[in-house]
Length: 180
Ligand SMILES: CC(C)(COP(=O)(O)OP(=O)(O)OC[C@H]1O[C@@H](n2cnc3c(N)ncnc32)[C@H](O)[C@@H]1OP(=O)(O)O)[C@@H](O)C(=O)NCCC(=O)NCCS
Image (cartoon, rainbow, N blue to C red):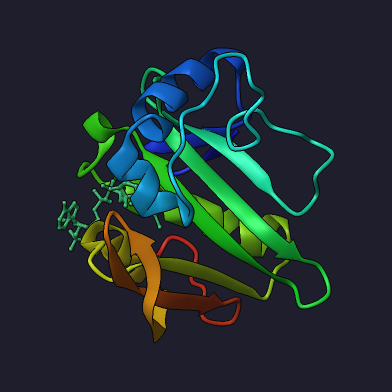
């Protein structure tokens, strides 16, 4: 397990799946804001690739996020789009509604940075998030991510086009354990 100050990132367990499905993916608004595609219902028993991990897929590393104190599941975190030639990847995360606003998101970003830069030797990490997602923007910026641009009207979300913000962090800027 990878450990931050408050959370741990571990492999996906079978019994995480119904919780994540019910609390993150069955929620139309949350899924529409976080997924970059249209929400649709998931048929029971379908091996949804967002939930059921295929360890042979090297471009993506999905984690389940747990509280260090007690081990309760609190969300998901992923290093995705891993490009071994350009040594870059994207990060993404989603916390269960009851676990938001407690500093876990900031901690998850820190652990994903440790995994990306230290464990995987990457040169660049990137995040795309909706421009109104203050909690995600703050979680990234607290860990040193810099706003690199705005993708105007790039996301269709629940009836309107929204802007996305692109943030990046380079290995030479990364300072382990340091938060703004
Ligand atoms: C985005 C998300 C991962 C952030 O994690 P979090 O644990 O809620 O965030 P934190 O508690 O670490 O807070 C980070 C900062 O955002 C602020 N913040 C938290 N929730 C906020 C909210 N609802 N509105 C405004 N600011 C908020 C905090 O005060 C903190 O600011 P500070 O660093 O200046 O003190 C989490 O809220 C989440 O899973 N949201 C739904 C899914 C999602 O949006 N995923 C990202 C898709 S790109």
